[in-house]
Image 1: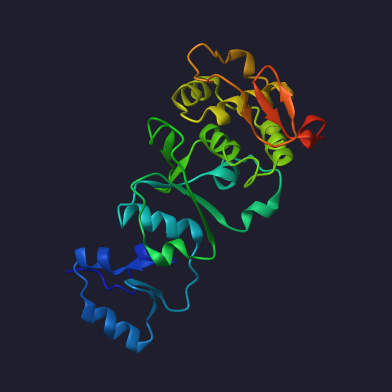
Image 2 (image 1 turned 180 degrees about the horizontal axis):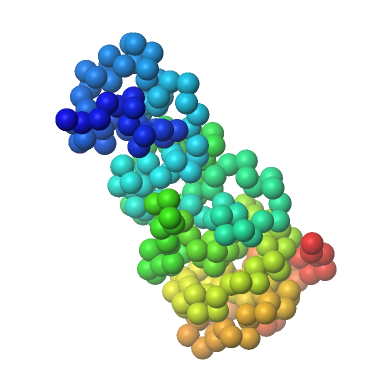
Length: 247
């Protein structure tokens, strides 16, 4: 006999997706009964939660990954760095930053949730590269991948000084992981910027990175009109980046 839906701890502080619950043996009629009785609250099409319970952003994504089998979504950017203890500015804790690679899904309730910030990412030739599952069953980017994905958002959706400061305190980055990510990165702007910032802050692991098999591309790329050309990475850098302070 299946456990009562209301007492099942799997759904504590977690969205209950009807699609998944039905596979466990729960019926639409039961959901209707529990909503009418005030034990469940309907949040959207096919999405419920236990009444008087708060939903935690990490549990929302956990449920999407494990109950809806949406393996193309994962926690990344500042949120993944925070989980690894790499924190510089607490303002980024306001929303959980979630990335997804194709095929993109279209769950309206998840995509519109105010505690979640979504990003489409197709940065690596191997989409699953260095995405890990933590002890709580949550899929998230390694700190190294999260940093590269954050750099890919420069200059419009990420702050340059904040990225530099995070790189400075990221002393535990693994050169072997970075090497593989850089070699499999398909965005030349991101690889060039990563190496530019790493050199500028004198990152302790930089001398263990080989550029031999990293595709940096040819020609000059422009980050900002009216910027300054950095001849080493062949990129026009915004003027305000040149003498930007850190920490």
